[in-house]
Image 1: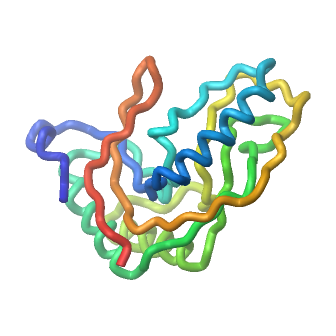
Image 2: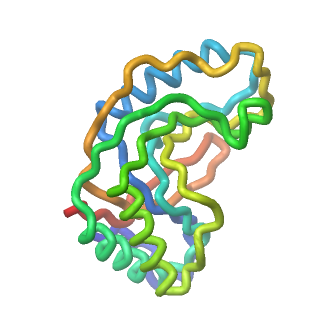
Image 3: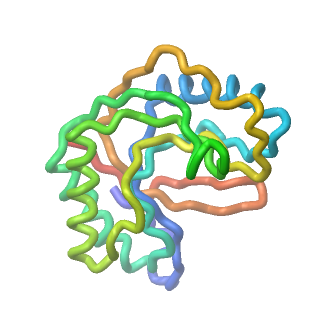
Length: 193
């Protein structure tokens, strides 16, 4: 159900995104990899993600008026009804936009036809509600850190065996930007069935 009642009627703008949560085993694997990457980046200045914030963003909505939460939630419900549980796996580290000009460090994941179908369903339904088109291509990943200063001497860390997991739900999240980093609160969640 919706956990947005505390803001109803206040005309509050909320920074929102739609994402797949990581189950605890996948979060632990991503955290372990992040720690191995951290020791290789001692000469760089990186704001490392908090493991409790790990997720796969399917669509960034941005600032949304509280009145938009029910239509966005309906888009989630309708798209999730078209897709069953997903199986994902980490495929290795990447830097966005490139290793030489890294701004974001990520752990990439597989992108199955079922995941692409879910993303396309979301985009289609959000467009019907006039939420606009996606501003860049979908790349399935978990953000590990944001780079302030990059020293590429060490290169990308080696990646061991891929870790596979299942995702059986999708959520709408609120992002709080604070001086201590971002905090994400679940607003609405539906099962993938």
